[in-house]
Amino acid sequence: MAHWSDDRIQRLFNIKLPIIQAPMAGSSTTEMSIAVAVAGGLGSLPSAQMAPIELAPFDDAYCPVVEPLRPEVVSFHFGLPSYLLLDRVRSAGAKIISSATTVREAVWLEAHGCDAVIAMGVEAGGHRRNFLTDDMSAQGGTCRCCPRWSMPSKCLSLRPEESRMAAG
Image (tube, rainbow, N blue to C red; front, top):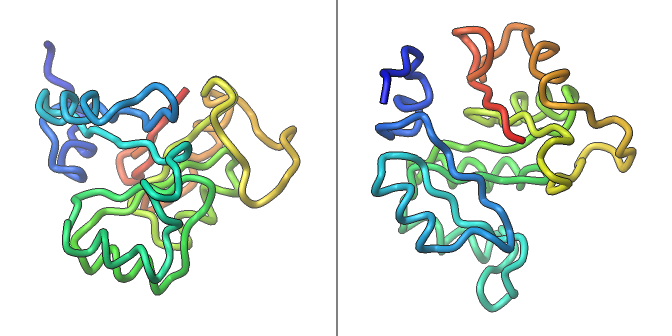
């Protein structure tokens, strides 16, 4: 494999390869997540279709389950929990990432403490959901969205100082 010259994603997530497995509900498995991690990427465990007994809502009662595990990355999709919970996750040593389906959501996520934002356009196979509006027409394609995200930002993208990723 040729060397990828931009290693920000590897440094941010402490991984060998610039590969992040999407947490695809219904098709990703624990075994797949482990295999991606063993290969050097960032494995992801989807939770959108887990039963309540398998996964509680991320709240004050569930946060103590995550804290002692000290995961390196915790991703939230469909918005973020409260600042207090994000602070607890960050204090446990985790980087926080989330997906945005619009530029407005990306800006909101950055303002609310995400270390990186995933641009998720309509190409994501319908597996996305707005969280700042119910208007699905507000979502565009990933290729249309990413260039519009070229404003200065703390969060991996098209510009070296940004931390945005694209999915779809």
